Image (cartoon, rainbow, N blue to C red; front, side):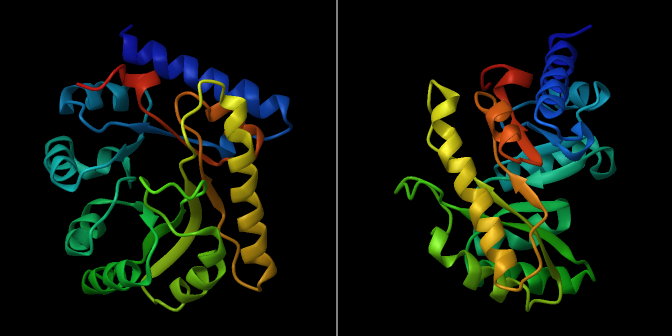
Length: 228
């Protein structure tokens, strides 16, 4: 058994144990293996080991990798910053786009999805700690953006995504996960369809995120090791 196999098994075990401990069904939580900067060979090994949801950050790298591996071998999630001029590639190659934070970007994704008769699944990215170095909409914009996104025929707002600051103690991230859950409830309270998914939690804090309601955890280092 390879290190990647062992890592995936261990993480799935942690997800299952954490979910059961807080009264959740482990099957409602998706493990996304973050495969940026990883070779197609390593990603293929991860797929063979059962990591069939994969997250990529860079369009050009992802396109080459997906073409090599085959789009149908996994469910592909785009989790990096997306420029409008790359939207057509994201729509063509990815099942989910996690990082939509502006109407302009949503409009372009909708336009490109319409061209290929696709309803693109997107997540609204929230800059949960309002950090200058990170992308994402402000929390106070969430309802208005969700309302605008709902008007596009070729988009489906399937969730919310956040990336809290890194803490050596994952407990310190809990307050930010709670905040994203509140935003989800506020969108529902505004009479809009509730975004079903909460994409939150990474290698160092995914168990805390699951305790707070995460349905998608994005794990890279704990599966693949340090970046190549």
